[in-house]
Image (cartoon, rainbow, N blue to C red; front, side, top):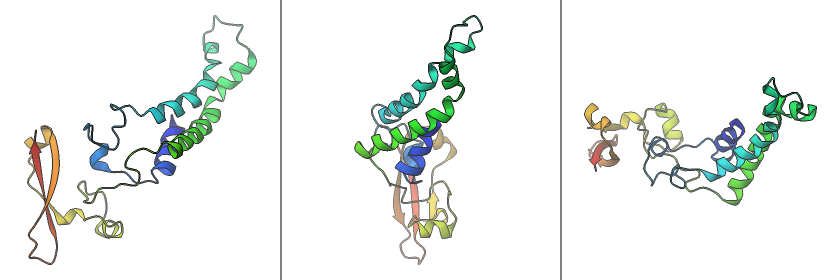
Length: 165
């Protein structure tokens, strides 16, 4: 599983995440995949998992006839499974790329970056975003929408508003 995660973050997505979609259960999210199920990750995980599971019965002390090679495979299952799932995940995503690769948020909603980092990434810095979302709004569901306000000042301001379903 860790091979799949690291391949996805470092190779497939190149360390670019769209946080507003990552923390959303919305079917329009780029991380929704197929009804919330990422078949690419599942296939790569299974490919890395299966070679080591052969020796799993050896953990039962009542089973004494488990072949030694199967036990060895089980003991080194991480060493075998990690590169298998990593490589399979990269290959599957090259052939069947997911939607939204390379997308990031236009606005730093979560104060993830310093002002300098945000400007370098061409992201509107958090201190340029004002919010009218209350604590009660955060508990209800809905989409976050951004509209530009106060365009008369030199420093652009953006306003977050909550759209209720």
